[in-house]
Structures are given as structure tokens and as C-alpha cells.
Image (cartoon, rainbow, N blue to C red; front, side, top):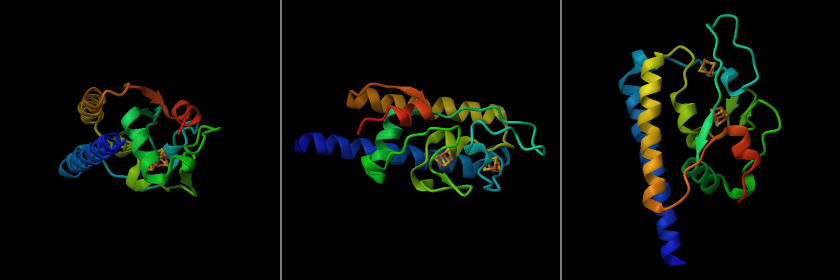
Length: 153
Ligand code: SF4
Ligand code: SF4
């Protein structure tokens, strides 16, 4: 039991380190990463792109360690289902779990360099996958709605 708790704490620490690394890549490459005016529109995955934008036909996929990290920080009982296309953590246009948001949320800016985003996604997914191997947990890369709706705490 104690060993299990230690392993879980280590796993969560690893996820936090990956998010810190990711945030640093984004802040060090701001011209490629783009800018966000925090309108929250991209958190509604059924929303048509704003007329002012080129369009973002995107989905958000999340990995097992990221869900574990969110659940550990919010409390498993606070993992919300997602009955519509809008992420349930977006309230009034703002992310209410900003500190614990997923890698895809950190990477996606609607006016970013697509190659930069794609390279960063690959790198961060490899890191998240390696956590699964290290801690011997199944690696899943799941659409946000399916991940939240299927979450078993
Ligand atoms: S990335 Fe774009 S659409 Fe998403 S919140 Fe920022 S400005 Fe709005
Ligand atoms: S976790 Fe936050 S940033 Fe990510 S989709 Fe949900 S509301 Fe948007």
C-alpha cells in the first residue's frame, strides 16, 4: 500500500515535470507557439471556427497519466462527464482547471505554427507514454468526451 502511494506520487510528479517542460518550450518559442486571447472558443469542440480565424477543426485527445493527474488534483469525485461538445471545465469561457489542463490544451493556440505544434505534440506524447511503461499502467490516448464519460475513479 505504501509502495503503491509512493509510485502514484512519483507518477504525478513526472506528469507535473512534463507539463513544466512543455510550458517552457511554448514560452521559449512564442513566435511559433502563437498567442491566446483566452476567449475559450476552442474548448467547445462542436463550435464552428470564429469568422475571424482560419478555422480549427480539432479534437482533444488525452492520455492515461494526464487523467490520473487531473483526478488526483481535483479529487476523482470532481471528474465531470462531458455530455456536449464543450469541455465541462470551461465555465463562462474560462478554464476552471487551468493549472491541471491537458497537454493538448497547453499546445493548442489557434494562430500557431502547425509544424511546431505537431512536433511538440509528438515529443510530449512520447514522454507521457514512457511514464506508462515505467509505472506499468496501460497507455490510452482517448478523445476527451470518451475519457471523461468513461472515467472510473
Ligand atoms: S487558442 Fe484561440 S480560440 Fe482558443 S482560447 Fe485562445 S484565442 Fe480563443
Ligand atoms: S481543460 Fe481547460 S483548456 Fe482544456 S479543453 Fe477543458 S476548459 Fe479548455
